[in-house]
Length: 288
Ligand code: AMP
Image 1 (spheres, helix red, strand yellow):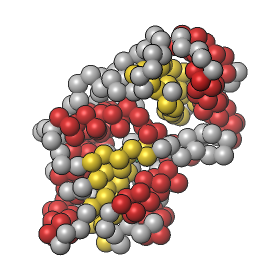
Image 2 (cartoon, helix red, strand yellow; image 1 turned 180 degrees about the horizontal axis):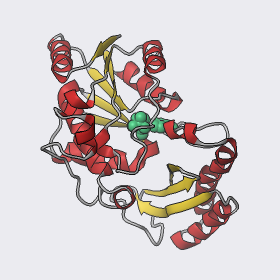
Image 3 (cartoon, helix red, strand yellow; image 1 turned 120 degrees about the vertical axis):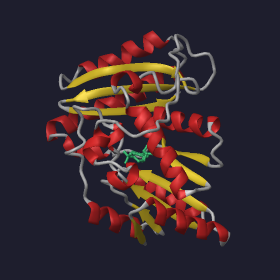
């Protein structure tokens, strides 16, 4: 596996591979890799002749009081996991080479150009974490121009992020297919996340109710409940059993527009949840 640190070198390698007729499958990550990331990698490996991953803790998508400086960065372990997954190249730039400015300046959100996806980027995470999805869309647009993939793989775990990227690709005519990958979960249902490492044993046990509440919503919808408020009441009861959980939003949305739905009416829908578990913020979702 080649490890590449500058956009110029990555573009050169990708351009050469494209001239040679290779297809490039791309998995962008912030590292601290787990089986969820590897599920994306497996698809990229299977569906393309070249598999490129990126590892970049993007300052632009962290708010001022968020966990940028303490975000886990086990670089050597990540490299080994990617080698074992058959990755051909890892793009691991510094904030300086990505934005042409210092990490500190990048954390103050001062690049020259942003990508902002209206509507889809303004609700839910867009409200709780102002600037976050703009930071994500901006860095992913840059990464697409650097890695030049045919296909890029994103987890349904971050469902709003996935929709924002799909919309950006459509609106800006990136010649890239976005491939959604199902959420990988622990045995008890907790969605894998690099941030789960922050949880104490007690918080980890409590965090399980997030997926249990979502499963309850899905089961009740399958059993015929179509009133979103009623689904919410039953899910909230499960969450209320754990005082460590503070729910930021719990909502049933149209899976395309992310608009709240009062009633399930047959169109694709999704339940989204964001909650603090102690000091750690977790998000999850399930399809209805
Ligand atoms: P991150 O490193 O958190 O930026 O995530 C990189 C990619 O991995 C994103 O597309 C995430 O949606 C995806 N991802 C993270 N956790 C999971 C999971 N549990 N299952 C599937 N994909 C995931």
